[in-house]
Image (cartoon, rainbow, N blue to C red; front, side):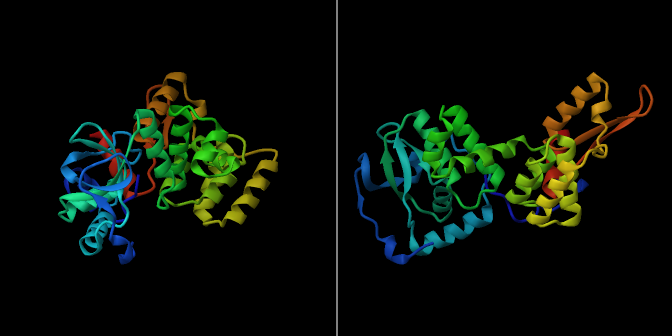
Length: 297
């Protein structure tokens, strides 16, 4: 999933409320598709996207830039596909390149043809996704967890698949245990993996949120965040969390959890008396604000 760097304009519809080496471009290709390591030219109209693709957002600016490069140099790195029938193929990896090739007006693209069942397709797509350099830590963590659960891999096998130490894999997956508010900040690059690990060292959501807000408000470095987390962990008493959700009646707490899941962000409900109160929905960026508005609509 790639983030879009450009902010969305506020003022339309609901939102109004708010490379390549040229020497490599000469590829050995064959005219008739064969399965193996040979690079084959395939019509773009014969390739369908990968239904197991873990990314659902692509940076349009980056795709336009890639299309411009393809127009000049051609496709340097071939796509990888599997054969569905005599005339149809399914993408295993290279959706950005396929999108850019279509944008550049290419009729055919170079591709490797591999034999793969659905399970292998999912695994290959997830592993390729993890190896991308533009993913944030949370996106990596989600793909790793999917590999564990959907491909039935052990931590050791997963470590081998993605060429990462087992401890590294474990640290990534632990990020998914962070409070939603912290996960959003990590996804938005407001905090780093080092900050997240410091927050995870604390016991209890209340301490984690205190540390997170201290990091955000004071723009703490990773080392300073680790020191603050140690002092907070050693303290005998922790200030009450700003959230009053723990004192909510059961039915209100269930509603708060449902709203948190719906909006994918922190939600507070505070009661004043038996039938009065207010709901507070948190957001950390224009994108999150727009997402909340879309959900409400």
